[in-house]
Image (cartoon, rainbow over all chains, first blue to last red; front, top):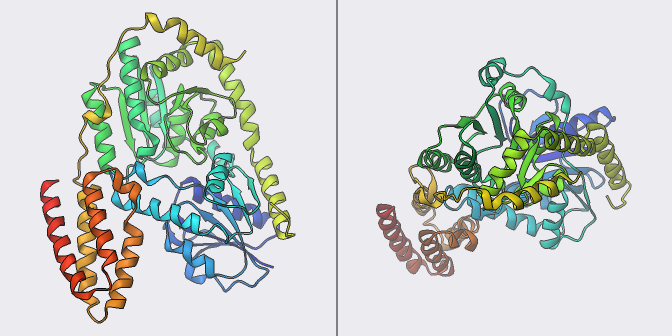
Length: 360
Length: 124
């Protein structure tokens, strides 16, 4: 029996790719010799040991196991149906296409195609590991009846202890409160609701805080432009769009953050929430999709369509030390559920059960 | 303490004292279609049709498969609902799909569709 890990795209720094790389590393440490095969590989990852082009994937024997990460529409989703071996799906969810229809036909089509493909694969897998309970519900709605279990994304936290960009830290450690959101620029992330919250905040408390919208707008430049136009319309000069930034820069933005605010309407898991927990940044988040599951009772919840409420909660979170302390303590407790040791042990148990032919 | 409840109670107690504020909605900002957007997507679609029409005159079956493959990738009612142009376009494509076995009708439809796309592009 051999293990193979397959996904369509291995990008640099995104949650799905990081999960796949962390799993490959974990499996290799546990004595499996596992390669990861992808259709598209970021040039920064082509030299990583074990990363290979999909056309190098050998023919799988009946007792071989394919771990397949699914997060978008791709012809590979159909191709794997006819590939041999036993198949274990890791489902990261696919954003509903409605979010992209105004901005990117290509992305909308990929998401639409992907959701159709997920449905058509419902009888293909012997087992599924979902990165959140929300994702498990999504598959149940699509007719999946195979054994399914929840396994959070595997995060090697030691990466976060690398040196942050000192220039950013020095520049923005000036006494002004920093509010941060880290994620790609995408309509499902609802960055516009961060901006309307900032407008409400300005009218209620003045503009003594600033918001950093940290993320890559690639492929959704017209949404990015609309966000910037919106900040201009609301006369906000304390909203900073960083664009795509390096990993040390991301670390720096977490280090300077006084609050992390997430207004996402659709998240399959929400790795940045865990990152905020790790950096002990109190979280305010809209209660949508997998976000409440990931927070697990920690952080503060809000809603998208009430900027006044969000601004009020943000102000309390920024300035009430007792509240901050309580929230951070709650997040610290929640973070232990996502420790590398815990999630890797859970994954190995689930995989061993799958190997033995038992329900994951 | 139940910090969420504490803050909720504080908000409820303070809400009457907070200023009455109005914030321009995000919809007040128009979408720019300079990049991919709907017009870009339509353009992509036209290019796809033109490209494939050029290489698939040999048989309607092959043409049909290409059109079918294209449509399976393109058409989604949820996407179509978001935008009138997309909906019109989708309806046109769905009609095309139904007619793909009828060679002449198909080609006439493609021409009509291209004309419609050009009209839509000039409007957006």
